[in-house]
Image 1: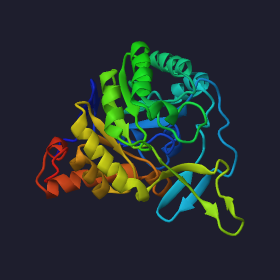
Image 2: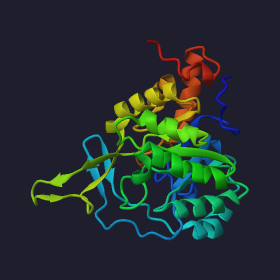
Image 3: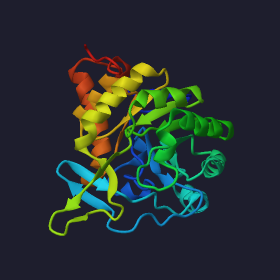
Length: 303
């Protein structure tokens, strides 16, 4: 009845709904709740060159309309992913995207090269925007020249679809987006979490071990929506919208703002079936509004 297919670079998605890195594990964790193959794609948790323990506990805090996290890219490294995780998930009938992170240019490149060798991983999401690590992460994503430099380096070693994940913790996100577009990115995804903090009034101490952490959930949706709208007008490559998407209506708003696809993140912790509900909801929305292609919604904000 309706057409939900979209393309990012040369990569086709059966629908524009994905799940965000760090909120969906490796897909296997959600098999009891959904048919992973019905997703347009999913982004696995951040993968680095060497294993990382992440930040000390406590590293999660609930807020009035979202959550703070300072997990710090905890993972077992790219070798573990390629040898232990990849063989078990490569059969999923959807686009598997690896979120690539690092502390140095060399680490980013080494991880990207190893993922490039995996036949059933058609894309990476280059994470230059994580606010919860002392080295790398957001450091690479807040300066246009540095963002372009790391993107250009990865473009030389990674031959498939390259998505760059952008930080909202900047003065003008469109400058970063244009910089990575010029350096060879096939798409940008935004936003990553906003830098925030929580304090325990009784003890007078920070709630998180690292004092500050990344804020996600409904609280950040208006900021994310604004940045997606600005970025979609500033670049020619596709924009993937992330930030506080909790239901179909939220997703439609991001499409109207110019997003070609969206990622559900924090919502997965509340409802592990939310991504499938959004896909079904999109179909119902389009039929109700007599819109038969998702492309008739994308960027169709009436001003």
